[in-house]
Amino acid sequence: MDTERQPFRPSLAILSRGDAVTRRAATPQNSRFVRVFEALAAVGIDARPAIYDESFPDAVRNQLLGVDGVLVWVDPIHQGKTRAELDALLRDVAARGPWVSAHPDVILKMGVKEVLYRTRHLGWGADTHRYDSAAAFRAEFPQRVRADGPRVLKQNRGNGGQGVWKVESLPNADATVRVLHAQRGSFPEDIPLEALLARCEPYFGWGGCIIDQPFQARLPDGMIRCYMSGSKVAGFGHQLIKALIPPPPQGPDAPEAQPGPRIMHGPDAPQFQALRRLMEGEWTPQMMKVLAIDEASLPVIWDADFLYGPRDAAGADTYVLCEINASSCFAIPDEAPAAIARTVRDRLVVASPLR
Image (tube, rainbow, N blue to C red):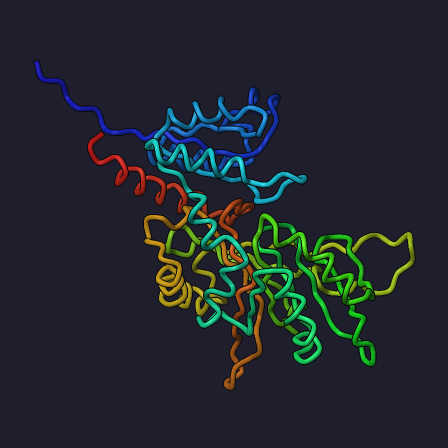
């Protein structure tokens, strides 16, 4: 007797960091991704949380091998831990069948600071340089910062301002530079250039290179975060930031200056439509070609962070890319969970056409 084939209902794990206690207690309802879980359920996807830590990789691997897809939200650096072991686990899982977003190999192409160098010729680019070794850094950077004005150094992999430095030479002091770390709570320091070079040498370890961009004078106007789901804009966030802006003089007991709130906007926000057209129509397709990434491999959720560049001849804004986040893009606009769910559904149905 023929039985009616049941519609395919994909299963998904949302992977994030946590300890064993968090793993045991995790549910969609108590997760910070609760709105994403709700949006996935609304399009017919059974999603559950998967909590990862290096102390129980086998349990996580077994869980991930039991689902159709994995949506990963894990920082590249967290409390001294990197993604090295997790990336190896995710590569193994993906090779065994489940679809993984974002795949570690895709992150290494677009979710690292090197993407700023590789795409420097695109409309979002700037005078960007890459140092592949400590020797090259020592040979090239001192003359560049003296000749070109303030520069921003960025380690290849990091988050939260870790390994990002504003550097400017001081008048009549070739051997001294003024530096400001982008991590919250940092203050400007005048230090020997040699000390800066030594401080940055560890960045050539796991990250592999240092990226060097010009400091953008319009930084006080804020940063625009363009949220993407695949190749489509899912929303925007605008934030007045404190990183790399020297704090005002204050006493030792003054409270630490805080960045302004990130104001979220949907993809149709009028003030960002020029940027949306550039991202969807030009820059994302061009980036994909340069990095050899097909559309199906783009992360389900990622963001491009832009600073305002110099105004053009007509007085219109220009935009300079300062970072792409593809490892752990959160918080997100209200419209983003539905966009994520649609993209996940489309990817899983294509990945499992016979189910």
